[in-house]
Each structure stands twice: as structure tokens, then as C-alpha cells.
Image (cartoon, one colour):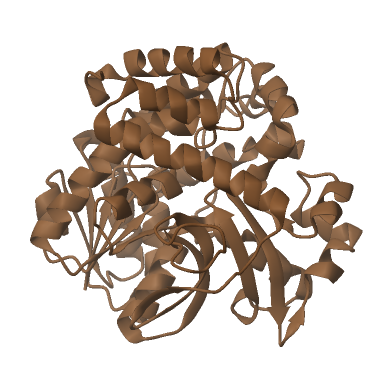
Length: 458
């Protein structure tokens, strides 16, 4: 079986490859094809991926190409993780938002809107190619904003598309760790949208562990440290970490604006340092040193993730590390790759899987349209993906879900019609903007900043 990774020149490709090494026998893969428009990055990260596979005894082939048609021809499963506009586009998205006094974050609010402007047309282009060359293949979208992009895919008729996010199952994993059991034993009930979801129940052998967990100060400290304990207990559910930006909106903006660099600007610098060091090391001649450099980069990148909320290391402290260097791990966290591969195993081998995904609601969440892409608990097996019945959700959560879904629907329509008016209406609707004057300025700024990728709008 062939798996294609669109965006295979990204920094996550070696991590995807490591995860596939643990899963390859279970899914039955013989080829991983990495495709990217950036030939130089593809060469570097493709070489790192091949080296990881070589060290494992070459259980499957790693190929690279800049031709999407070649990559997807013969593929049964395609994972998309692209960044149109590269890291510099993300940095622009975040800085423009902050300059207008609103959240500057990659996927939530105006930053996610700007990324969608670039991501959706590109993903639809790849989906069109996949439909022609491998019409029975499944597409797993990890390109951000994942839920919004998946909505556009479904609206365009690409029904064999699934939005994936490693954060969707954070509640299940946290409860499993707290209970000391394997996550597969937990049956979680997740509802909401991507980066806007709650885990209401987590059953172990018929017992819901959520009430006991959120009554435990240690669980709240270790698994929900972003949030004040009274808030978690008031809501009565496990909170997706991205809810921080809604529940602490003004604090998040203040904290991010107080930094010298945005997260996007930091990533631009870190990625350039990584590229420079890999070129100096030379992956082909010094593969061990190159892998140590890569995993040192991963360690450094993780040090400052949401540090303003977690209370972690500041960018200035982390920047004192002059070189990237770390031991090559025997295995790492599976992240989005583990989500995708677990679905592939379930579909290919009828191995029932319970997991939270971004798929059409059908009749899962009361009050949402059947075609609304939601983040919801699903059962996956050889016959497909089946959203689990959620029923009615509490009014405060439903109000936020419906408001953000309205924003997502308007955003997809704006991109389809290339309509400035609809784009302004979309941002006016988003709860982190809620202002015509601000939305209009943001839309104008984003359309101008990314014109080379999105063209002219009316």
C-alpha cells in the first residue's frame, strides 16, 4: 500500500516517518511518498526520513517528488499538511492581527482566517487531482485551520476527506494517563469544532471518569493547567487547550503582544537555523549529526509552545541555546501521524476504532446541520467513519459552536466567491473580532499581504 504525504518537505516529515515505522506492519505500507513544492526542503527532510527508515532495516520505501499527480497516483491514503506562504505567511497573519488589537494565533480567529484564504484553494486543487488519479483514496487533512479546510472539502463534494487533529483526543489521553490505563480502553465523548471542543464523558468499563478527574487537583494541575480550576469545574468537562483563547481572550492578546516576537516569527527564525545547520552538517555525509540536529530543533521548538499560558520558558531564555543538539529518540509522540495511521488501520483491516475526528455532523450533535463539519467522537471500521450520537449539548457551548460555525461557513463562501464583503461579514461574526471596522481593516490587510497566493478579490 502507498501513502502520500502532501507537504512532505515540512519539518514534521521525519516525525511522520518515525510513527509509520511503528505502524507499517499494522497498516501494510510498502511506500511513503513525500511531495512538496519546495524542492530544497524536500531533499533535506526526505533524506532525514530515508535515514530513519534505513536504520530500521528499510521496511518500506521513501520516495520524493514535486509532482502531486505522481505522488497521489496509486495511493490509497493521502495526508495533507501544507503551509501556503510558508512560515513567513504565518508570521504575517499573526502580526497583522496583533497590530489591529486582536488575537494573533495561527489557527484561531483572524490568523486562522488568513491561513484559510491560502490553504483552501490549494487543498481543493490537490483534492481534484486525487479524485482523478486515485478516486477511491481517502484524504486526511491536517492543514490548518483543519476543521474549516475540511468543511470546504466536504462542500466541494470530496466526501472521502477527514479532518484530523492530535488535540481532538487530548481529553481521552489525559483521562487514560490519570487512570493509569491504555487510551484505547477509554470511550470518550467529544463534541464541538476543531480547536473548539469539549470532552464531556470518558467511560472506563461503563464508569464515567470525568467527574472524579476534575474533582482531583492533581489532574487539573497536570492535564488542565492552562485553566483556573473553578472554570474547569464550572464547565464540568475536559477543555481543549485552544479554548484558552476564548476563555482568557484579553489575557491571551496582552501576553502575546508583550512578546518581542510572535510564535510565527519565532518559528521563521528556528526553521532557518535548522536549515542552515542541516546544510552545514550535510545530511548525506553526516546522517547521525543531522538527526541529532533535527531532534535538537524539535526539543527547542517545544520549549516555548504556548509558554505565555503554560508558564514555560520564555523565547529569550530558550534562544540562549546556540545549537540544536539532542539524542535520537527510540520513539516519540505519534501526534497527527498516529491519528491518521490508526484510521487507516481501521478502514483497511476492519479494526474498530473510537476516536474524535472532523467530519460532517450527520445527526450527531443536536442543533447542527447534517453537513456541518464538527469535531466529534466517531467509530471507524471497514465500512467507513460513523459519528457517534451526542444529542443535546449545554447552551453556553452550543452558542459558541454555532457562532464559530457561522463564521466558518461565511469564510468558505467568501473564498469560493472571492468576495471581500463576505470576508468582512465572516470576521465580524467571529467572537474574537465582533467589529465591522476592525474586520474591514483586517480583511484589507490580509488580501493585500497575500495577493500573490490568493489573487484579486471583488
